[in-house]
Amino acid sequence: MSDVANHITIVEEPEETLSMNPRKFILWLFIVSIIMLFAAMTSAYLVRRAEGNWLEYTIPPIFTYSSIVLVVSSLTMHWAYLSAKKDNFASLKTAITVTFALGMVFLYMQFQGWVELVNQKVFFVGNPAGSFMYVFTGLHAFHLITGLFVLVFALVAAFRLRIHAKSLEQIQIAASYWHFLDILWLYLFIFLVYFH
Image: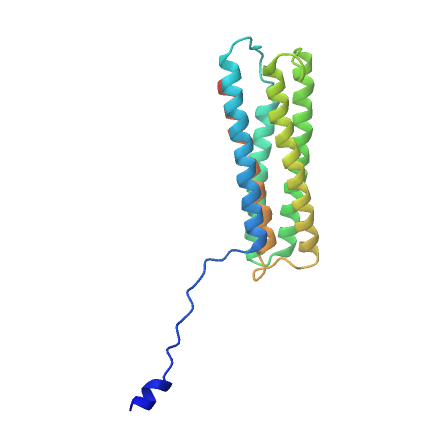
């Protein structure tokens, strides 16, 4: 009996480790870094505004309209995700294309907002109120351009039938990033309206 006991080995089950898709992990790291960047900038904005010598100006109405465009683009991005889950490939391609087009419209409207700011004599150089406005909207526009590249890659994958009900990773990444950019803009817009 003792010989049998000596030969019995105890096999321990390996502990389950928490795992995340590497591409999604990189996306979330990127999102967190963007949040930290804008949190630092909005804090700096509030500190500088409290010091005085702050230019008062009217935020161009086109920024309100561009916000609506971006919210609609979030709806079309969700439409793309739902289409992928149902293997509705025609709808998926249409939804990504419409989202891309709305992103381009948003960027054009942002540019028109800058034109209106210049017409109000609000410039990038000069009073910090204007500088912050251009930096906030410009940095968001830059990140939105990166979002448009993500959409292009998703659209190419959709045309190659690489996005479908059993392969949703790419559309999930595109949708998560796009929705984040929309939420970020709404935060910035509300912040600028309330604290300008």
